[in-house]
Image (tube, rainbow, N blue to C red; front, side, top):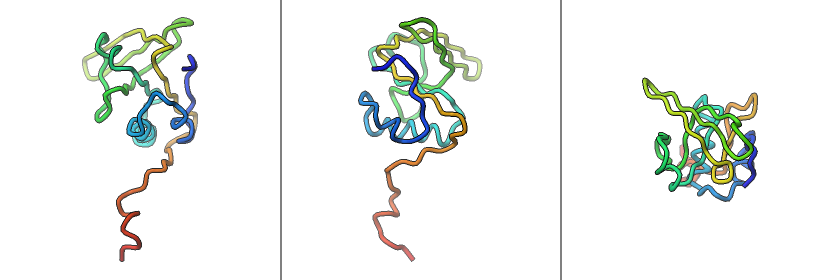
Length: 122
């Protein structure tokens, strides 16, 4: 996986990442559309078990917070929730960082609502 941040301006940018399940891809799009976080990080389970990082609701591998380039091989990841603060280092080779592109407020996804299956409901 690339060590760079993945700029998210459309669903195609999210969909191109093979490490994520379809459900996780949808959750990233939802977080961009419904929350104000600029960074969403996918973290593998083995790494989460070693870190004190809170994941988002309905996503065991996704976390939100502030991320910065710490070194060639590591991200510095900070979370500030209520009175709890976390400051962890994550290997770039194992994590995926999604970054909301400037001006993007919502991501259109290929997923359809339940009303799409019922035809024209009148």
